Length: 386
Image (cartoon, rainbow, N blue to C red; front, side, top):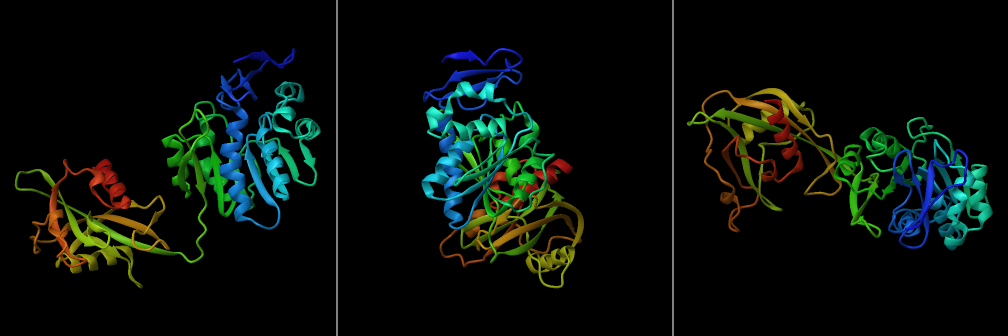
């Protein structure tokens, strides 16, 4: 790859380099990062932010302006792609781009994006020199501020183009706190796209309330991420309350009570408990469920876990499950059949909704053995609180 310094003076904070598809990018020397993929700057922009972000947004919003929030204007390449796509679709896009440390035109000009993209140079140059541009296809404004200092634009945007430097260089922009602000800015059904597919980033998106999908990445990257803000006006909340009952086994080691149930999705292992009924509080629900499932009362103890993430019901995609797990203890000797195993409810002739209860050694029970994510989270939380 060819590498050149930007023009002389105090502009040597960046060098330009040619990338794998012939287009150019800049290397930011202070952070030791490139503004785009070295495998192809223009190819990455078109794939990650254009094909996976802007085009689906145009499809969702068939009338009116497309509203775009970009995090990290950088060289301006993403906005040039928006301009081209708006022109090709005969549409208009309104773009706000956050950039607390904008490049000068002298730094950006050697990239020669007018040649590589086909956008008139006057458009690209005005975005850098003036921070604004308006024509038939785009209304652009560069906002010289960071994500946390920017105005709280609530439910204003169809798509967020999240193009901050990588987590290693700007870790604060890949946190739950940052994802919360971007989710707030999106309209219901809006999406955020980014080139980064790290597990920590995906978990931060999920914790912020996004539904996250992995998509094929651009050349040089196996995957990228697209996060969607829920749009489900028909949806309902389903609150479910579960008990984590433990005891000392005959060998002196800890055991936990689990429920094996045959459900429409097959035989599953879960914690005993069920749905909150009208007029009940969570502990009243759990005491009723104990009488129904165990046939005896329990003493409800401390709260273990409350769902921090979105869990869509396995039985109805229009239901979002909020799961609450409490510690509980039996108030007397076991009065139920407690010799159940998962195999007891897996046979084809076993009636639907059949339940068997059984004890599992605490030290041997792995989170992944539970069918439902909320039970897995609660089991991890309970073990951490011991």
